[in-house]
Each structure stands twice: as structure tokens, then as C-alpha cells.
Length: 264
Image (cartoon, rainbow, N blue to C red; front, side, top):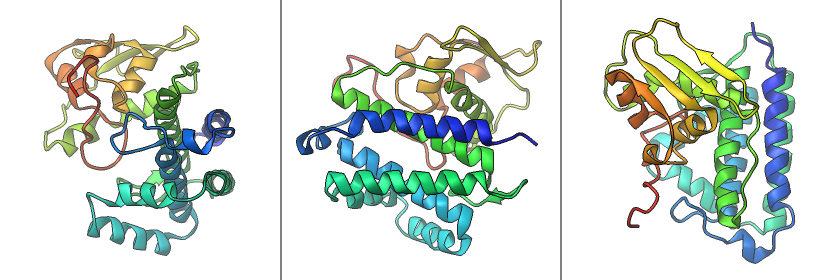
């Protein structure tokens, strides 16, 4: 059984890096628009805080989490936006404190979770490592939105390895959520990490293949960039189809981002 400590450590590092971006923002900057329609920087941080809270309930109080799922089922198209809107209405200092406390509590809960534990979620149940990976993925992706709003570029790190692996593992989910039958055969995926390492998934003799930069792959599966703007290469029709629908997050298919230069 894989030790979840490394991914929990990387989740904390990713959160701390984003914290540095927002800690000294003015009230006006908290209201800057991000690439997500209708969402300000405050909405982005509020969403992370809300999801950390839901994750903490899933780990520590599954009855309470079940009630949250019922709320989501009652308003499937609105519950994510509603959670972000509620948090974004807090004064920035309160929102920041709430996010910090929640993510610390979640990290502590994940570190002390029993070996082999499985936690309910809005998608399939998750292990401790999977829960931490999902939180890292969201923190990185929403951190990109914050950085875009502020006009800054974040330096990529090999923490992307967790997101890339999640993107690979959610291949069949991506097909299923679009009502498509997942391919039977595994794909070969070769991604170049920010450090220059090559991360490899799948059998060497696979017919369908994906190659390119790990950053581009992670941008794709978190739907933070349009495929047309990324330098990912495919071999095989199934792999090509996958890159049009890939998503590493639970829930219905995301709308994704338009290509650069597309009319808004």
C-alpha cells in the first residue's frame, strides 16, 4: 500500500504557494475576475475552502458528508457555485483564515487516517492518497486561475506528477461521464516533467499513445487550457478522442476553456 505522506506534503506545499499569492491582496484585488465566468479571486479561494470542508467531513464524519451529497443532488447545477458564492461574501481576512484552518485540519485528518481507509465522495470512493491527490489537483488548478487574474506566471514543479497520474487514472471515468464506452486496451503515456524526467504510464507496446509536456497534460485534464493551445501528440483514434474529453475531476463534463483568440 502506497504511503500517502508524500502527496499530503505536496498538497500542503501547493496550498502554501497559493497562499503567498493572496495573503497580501487588497480588498479590491480579491474581487478581480478570474478565467472562470462569474468567479473572482475570492470565489476561487472560497471554493477551495468549501471543498476542503467537504473533504474533511468525508474523512471524519461520513453521516454529515452524506447530508452534503443530498444537498448536491437537490441542486446539481448550482451547489458548487452556491458554495463559492457564500464564501466569497466573507471579508477577505475571514475567508483567508477559514481556508487556512480548513486545509490544515484536512491535512491532519489525512495524516492520521487508518491504513486502507476509503472515503465517500461525489464521484467514486477514494483512498487517503487519492483524496490528497484530488485536493492537490484542485488547489493547483484554481491557483492557476488566481495567477491569471493577477497577471503572474507560476513556476511548474514536479508536484505535477500526482496530477498527471490522476489524469491517467481517470481516463475511463472521462469516457463514462460522456456516455461513451471506455477503450479496453491501455494507452501508453509519456510525459516530460518540469525537471526533465520522463513519466511513463501504460505498456510499451500499446497502440494508442499520448506524448508531450506534463504541464500541458495537466492543463488539459484540469480543463485549464484548450487542447488546441497545447503541444500534446497522439497516436490512435481512441487516444485522440480521449484528449477531447479528458477530465481529472469528479462530476459532470466540464465546459473547458475556449482556444486562445476565440471570440468571447
